[in-house]
Amino acid sequence: MGESKKCDHNDGRSREEEAFRKMKPTNEVIIQPLTTPISLCFDWMQVGSLLPIADTMDNNSNNSHGNTEDEHNGECCESTAEQNRAENRFYMVVFRSIRAADADEELLYAADAEAHEEAKRSGGLLTYWYGSLNQERECFATCIWRSREDAIKASKLPNHLKAASLASTMYDFYDLQRYWLTFSSAGEPIFDSVASLISEQ
Image (cartoon, rainbow, N blue to C red; front, side, top):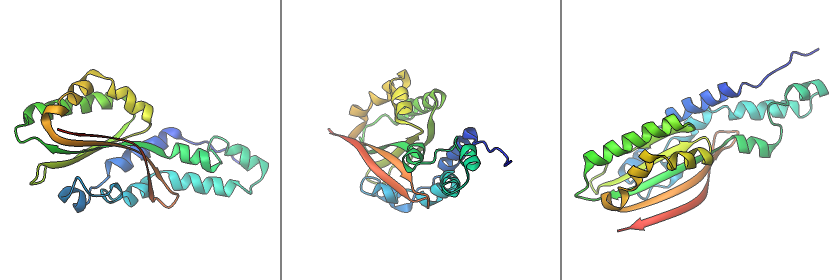
C-alpha cells in the first residue's frame, strides 16, 4: 500500500504570499511608469519561481500514468490543465497616474495607508506596491489579489471609497487597468486584460 499524500493548501497560500512579497520592480517602471509594458514592470520570473505552480504541475504529470491508488491519493491536487490554471490565476489592479501639482500629499498618503491596512484585514491581498514619483510626477502602483472577489469586497469598504474619492482632485490623469495574471509551469507570466477605465482631467 502506498502512503496517502495530502495537499497542504495553506502551505501553498503561504508560498504565494512570500513570492509576491519579494516582487522587485525594474528600472523601466521606475523611470517610465506610464508607458512600461506590464510584462516589464517587475521581475516576474523570480515570482514565478517561488510559486507552488511547478510542484502541482509535476505531481499531476507524474500521476497521469500512475496506478489507481496514486490517482486516488492525488485527488486533492487537481489533475486537469484548466483546474491548474484556475488555482494559478491572480487578479491584478494597476494604477498609472500623473499627480496634480497642487495635490495634498499628506492627505493622499494618509488615505492610501488607511485603505491598505483595511484591505489587508479584509483578506486576499497578496501584495501592494507603490512607486515614487518621477520628475514629471508620474507614478505606477499595483495590488495583486488572490481572487477578483477579494478585490471587489475590499473596494466597497469605507477607507477604500474615501481614497478613491480623492482621485478627481489629486491627479491630472490616471489609468486604472485590471488583469488576470497566471504563470506557466516554467514560471513565465501571462497577462489577460480584464478592463481599462481611463480618466483625464
